[in-house]
Image 1 (cartoon, rainbow, N blue to C red):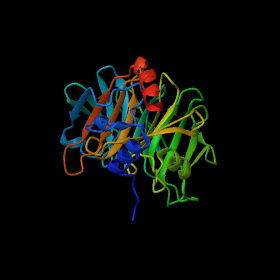
Image 2 (image 1 turned 180 degrees about the vertical axis):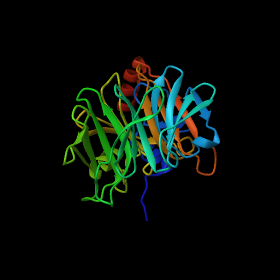
Image 3 (image 1 turned 30 degrees about the vertical axis):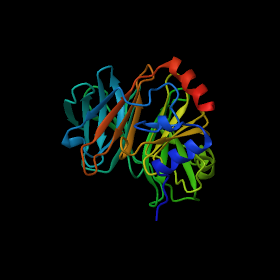
Image 4 (image 1 turned 90 degrees about the vertical axis):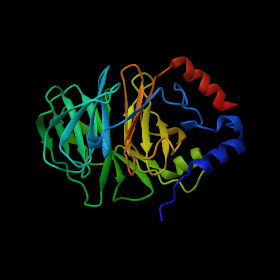
Length: 291
């Protein structure tokens, strides 16, 4: 049976340790408060049926994101205010898990680790990189590292020594994969930071913050958001309210640091939550969390 960090147990732990007071526990998104962001979304968008299985999102422009689902080779250009969509086909049906924007175009990650490069305007496939991993390896997360001009691929199930999170580097200059993982994070670090020895941290989305340079890694199964340094070592973890994050599978930032998190629908509609970035609130939340 999969052991998961429940929201109630995490909130209880935080209240006992004094990180949150009792009147702060109702209706919040993150525990403790996420630096730079309000603890409730500025907007929650209910997504239409084609995005019920939304599996990845990426910034497109100041009014739109692009999204994929885990069943069809389609790119959805999503208006973040109205929810209206423009659909572009790029390939056959498949288990597509994440998408990220780069100067070349959009890279789509399939669950087996294969990458598809799409034209940023038309959504048409430009290239395909059939990367080869163990048949026991399953991917859900991809992040663009602008500083090193590479993609980081994080496996959900790694087929390697557990319990670890592995990240592989795909060089965007050579379009080649490094043979060995460049990031290895033991689950014991997440357990230590979350004060829960049952955490099983399986990445479902990842992105670098454009202002702070920190690496954000989301885990749907653990209902956690981890903030790591550039080398991928976790510095803090934040519990996610399951009433608001029923199945968080997508995460991206706007150029100004605005945060978007998408949830698959399960038995209800999929959602997109929007959190504007406030640098001043970042300092306030940090000081509050230390009290």
